Length: 148
Image (cartoon, rainbow, N blue to C red; front, side):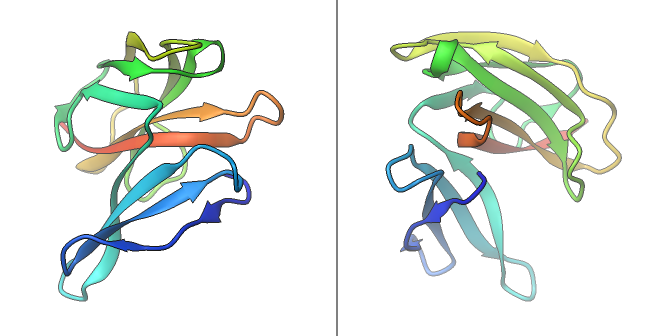
C-alpha cells in the first residue's frame, strides 16, 4: 500500500492482537495479525487477511515446494489476484503469478505457482489485489510457510 491508513491496535491475549490497515479511508480492510515473540518480546507479523481473499491451501506453517498449489476463493477486479512466494529477510519474491477467482462475487480459484529455491527455512505466500487506477496494493492475505 502506498500511503496506508492504519487503524487502532486491537488486543487479543496479553501477547497478541491485530491491526486493521486500508489503502485509503474508504478502502478494503486488511487485518494484520501480530504477536510478541522471542527473548526480547519484539512484535512479529504472523500473517494478514482480508474478506475478499480466502486461501484454503496451503495452510499456515505448511511445508511447501515448487510449484505450490494455491486454492481458495476470492473476489477482485476482473477476478485477478496477484500471488507471490517470498522468503524471510528479502524484498524480492522467489516467484510471482496470479490466480483468477470471482469478479463480482466470491468465486473459487486454483492455480500453481513456481518459485526458485529458498535459502532460508521460512517465508510466506502472499495473495493481493491491485488498484486498476494506479496499480497500488489494495488488500492482501498472507500466510507463513516453511520451505522443504
